[in-house]
Length: 225
Length: 195
Image (cartoon, rainbow over all chains, first blue to last red; front, side, top):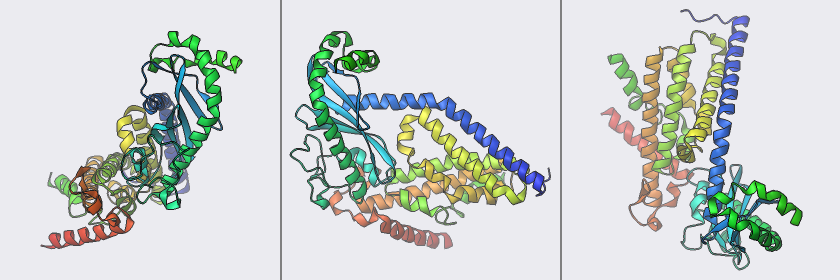
């Protein structure tokens, strides 16, 4: 078969057909994959909430609360409040990243999980594990922003930045500070939240299933707060 | 048969994308901070290269010469996006490690270069082989470069410690080390190929 001649009709037609076919394929695929992708994100987020909270028996997660664009997940063991997981978004080196930071009752960082990021592979992407590694002064685990200055040591703070990724490190620590501020202002509500959850706790059962049923708890929470 | 074999080995050795054609330097220098990263980038490119070569080879007579580049770019970019969506939806574990590299493939001139230089002139079977050879060649060279930089820079090989990290030369993890390591490897390979 001979190649099509480069006249106006052929050029316009072939480009239009290629572009339309590509658009249709991508559009179709987007619709098909939207649901599994959302499900993956949801699962990852739920797993992250559990992993950043204190390891206490029979932990239940309260209804998510939003504050300044951050989402707070409070955790209760029975009726006592045990800690809060805060989901926070911040601008990194390669765009917005999302991180889930967990605090215990005293305000110490229990753990964190980076949910989404576009940092440079090999440099900024070390943030997923760097600040958990107990080496020199790079770990934030078990420390509280009250007593530790969550600023990279280059800027006079108490945390070592990721090697060759100072911008990503600054952004990460900014995110933790932001999460802590939200945790602090959410603390007062947490006390009243505990008393509400007291009635819910027996039905909610053990940790992981509780948050999927969370939606039904919302109206009660709203009226009481 | 020998033509098929020739096409396949071409990309691996004689026209190796990194050391022979010196194509795709941006991802080569940026992602080879460790052997695993280099290999991941190579494999992601391999996949897109094979798919886009086949499709472009099938479409080659339906696209007039004067508009072939925009048409090829649309095909390649669509493939990359499809790979990203499918991986994110059904292979989340692989997406975790390869996800960061996928957008980099669109700007990788190897893909367009092979579409232009090979797939536009040959049938689908040969084009697939060319994509496979080139992709493997790219993967291999990125893995070697990544392994060298990882070893010299952080004292590890495929994340396995070889010597204490404190003795590593940080410069090899950073951009200047990429150029230095690439230049020495290229010189070495040129010398070996001449013999």
